[in-house]
Length: 146
Image 1 (cartoon, rainbow, N blue to C red):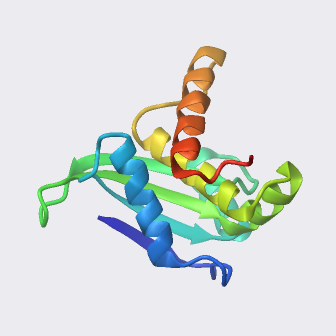
Image 2: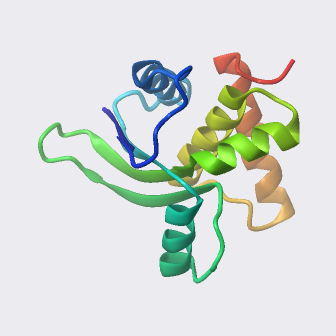
């Protein structure tokens, strides 16, 4: 089950059900179709507060992941955790990187899911693995910039 919480309004061209469908496709691609996650859409102010509280960084960031990995007692499925995304950053980074908003959004969602699964970019080797997997997901979703 994919839960989406909107603390910030999604752009009109994005449909929550379509976002959920693509996130489910990510989980299926990673062979974890029954795992559950929550995605929170917020803004730079919200991400800055959370980043300061949990990571000690007093600045907004694009995506934060909080891994829980426990069983949902209601469904019996594994609950991976929460991903929080700044829609402000999605907009600015899509412009900076010269690709569509949707590409940036699913780049950050994929990045967050991979963090929930234990992937990290704490050194060059791990970063290469994470970003290769992220690129594979984007290619699978067909939202990568041509």
